[in-house]
Image (cartoon, rainbow, N blue to C red; front, side):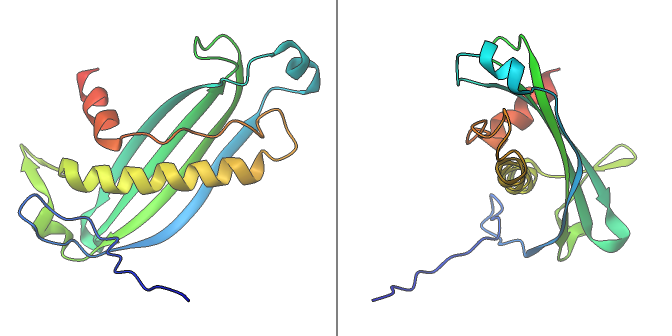
Length: 159
């Protein structure tokens, strides 16, 4: 028997307002697997290290937000040897986007709760793409860990 469950993928604002969004596009900007079979014999640990970066871009006139992710994969947590890198692009359409944006000086800012939702989806998409594209390579076991997008956003603001 299949049990139906209620699933609401839309982010919810701190005020309890659901934000309708649609994932419009997912693209691979680039994927580079630097490590090879000779390198893999030198790498004993399967505890890869990851470095994640992201950038967001608001296209307010079209109610779109673009999230660019960049993940570098290293041989270990100390980031000794770079084994590969993947860059992806995720495009989201947010209904009534201007209603949710925060105006600061002459710029608009994405509220943290919304950016965290979009970043979480983007990281998950990047994880899946890397798993699919790295099959049969040194990175086939390099699965991007489940991360807290809010913590990533807050850490990026500190820099």
